[in-house]
Structure formats: structure tokens, C-alpha cells
Image 1 (cartoon, helix red, strand yellow):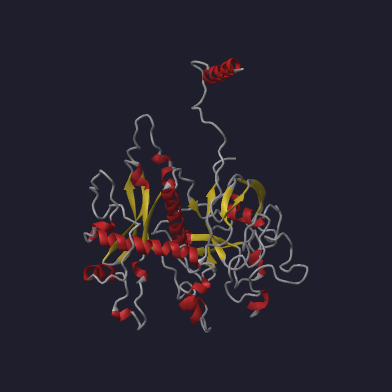
Image 2: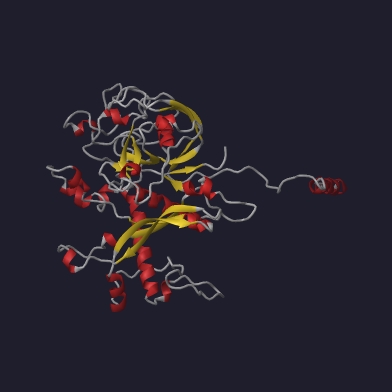
Length: 454
């Protein structure tokens, strides 16, 4: 018996090692790949649907044509980004700035050190030690002076307790101008290993001068791929005064003061965030994920208009609303979303302005609040007749507006309707727009991530 067992083992080893010599066998990758589900996200399987308005346009648009399109699979946040989740971003920015200031001031305990290796990086680029607690309440006079620059000065404190100055909470991110790389004049020559002599790109650059963020657009000669990079510095703190600015002659002071800061609103959707701030959040979220995982994933990003609409329909190709029906009430007469049912009747659907996320049932994909509560940013540029030119595979009308472009080119598609909108804007196929550098108390966002596989 023992002898037979040895023979069987040797036979299996011989078969396993008997690869055909000189034949194409691949790199030997074994097994199937299964991408783990990102936390708080829902998987949206690939499919096709009729993209565009199901009903006549309320504003008389004649170019809003419905088209049949296909969309690849992706992951999507099950709810809008909440105040609590956005605070994680804001606090990370706050802490990173504080740690950097301490390192620049020569406090090496806040610099990340490596065993058996001398860190030669300058204080401005050295890696930060996130395991060390930031001494916000230190009695050390030098540390108090270093961190004190992040607080409001006495003239701006308004008599309240010491507070972080939101204008100091700046985040810098970069992106590749693929639209410029795709221009025929900028085609990379793989034979010469260089770009054409006349290759050039319009890129954005940001820098801080005398405490003010300066955004400029310049034309840069392309000699390396780094010349295709744009830089943006954004202040990440939401606009809280917008409640009074957008809704005058109303008492919205409590919302203005407390909506983002108070824990009672932690599960409410973040608002007052521009499209550019939402883009920065996505970039930071990608960085957060990749820094904690051995294998990086696809980038977090804003959904395209097609992805958002496909997800909102919940697999129902001709659904008028995310819940699938043609009416905004269920069979018992209850409203299905947080919106404005009638003039002045904001509370008939249980909410006055914004409500906690997931206050209403999800659609068939498991996504909450795809209609009402707050409208949502997408990555797509707005054009009334975009359906006439987009592809029928993963359609997206994209224009990466530069700093010096006219405002009409900075319009981004928003979808879903909000607490202050009538039912028409809750329809899956209806779109409107807002300028990418504007913030509103009725616009939020959620992220998506492309899926690695079929």
C-alpha cells in the first residue's frame, strides 16, 4: 500500500511539471479573481437601457433624445456621502497640515522613520508619522505657536471657543489631461520615444500666494508625460452660509450654523460641496484605499451621467422613477421620496429640507435616495443635445474645463432632484446642471468605482 502511494505521488508530480517546452503557456496565473466588495458600496451589474427622458421635457427641450446604450459593471455608494464621511476627509486634511507644520519646524517625532535607513527627505516631502497623536492642547509654547496658525485669530473668533480656520484646510491633487494627450498633434511616437516637436497641452496649475489660492491655465510644451499633469488646490470645508444665500427671507440660521458641524446631522447628506471639492474627495479616497492595501484598486470617482441613470433605474429599463412606478406615492398614499410635493408643502413627505440618508426604501439595486433628498453631481459635462453625439457603449459627454474657460463650459450634469424640487426632477432620465465651482444646499454626491472583470 505504501509503495502504491509513493507511485501515485510521483505520477502527480511528473504531470504537474510536464509543461510543453517552447510553447505558449502564459505566465501561470492560477485561480479566478474575485474583487472584494468595497465597504458601503453596491455592485451594479453591466447591462443596457434606454437613456434619456421618459416623458416630455418640462422646459420644452427638443434635443433630449432617448438612446439605447450599454454600461459596464461598477461599484456605487449605497447612499450619498454623509456629513460624517466627509468629515473624515476634512479632519485628514487638517491633521496632515498640522503634522507637516510640526515636521517643518524640526519636530522629528512627527516624521516617519525607517529602521536601518536614514530619511534624507526634506521636511516638505518627508513621510508623516500618523501613529503619533497631534498635541492640539500641548502646554509647550513652541508647539502651541506652530499649531496656533491653524486657528482663527482673535478678530475672527466672534467670542466662541477656539476654532480651526476653514480657510487653512487646503488639499492639493493632480490629474492627467487625457483630453490633451489624445489630440493628434500630441501623439507619442513609440519609434522615437518622444513627443512631436509641436506637442503642447493646456493645463491648470494652482499655487498659494500671500495666503490666497491662485488658479491659472497655461500652455505647456510636452516633452515628458509629467507635462500633461494639472494641479488643483481646493479648500475642502463645505460652504455653510449657502442656506442664507440661496433662500433669503427665511429663517435658516440654525442650518447655516450647525448642519455640517453638529453630530445630530452626521447621517445627513453633505451639501455645500462644489464639483471640484467632490473631485478632490474622490482622489483622496483612492489614496486612502491604496495606502492600506497591497493591491490598489480602480480609482474612486464621480459617476458618469449614464452610470448614474442606469443605477437609478435599478435594472428596470424604462422606469420613470427609481422605485419603478409611474407615481410618487405608493398604494397607501405615502410619498416615495423627499421632495416638494406642492407649493409650500415641504413636510408632506416627512422631511422639510434634507433628511437622514436611507430614510426611504432602496431601489432594486439596493441604492438609497436616487430620487429626492439631494441632487447629485456627476462627472459629465452638460449639453442639451449630448445624446446626439455620445457613443452607445459607456456613453459620456466629457469636457475638462480649464480655469480660463467660459462659464458655459463649466456646467456639470446633476441628477435625481432634491428636497426643494418638484416631482419632474425626480425622474431617472431628467437632468439639469450646476457650475463646477458653485455649491448649493441641495446638491451632494456619491462615488463609484469601476469593476475589475466581467
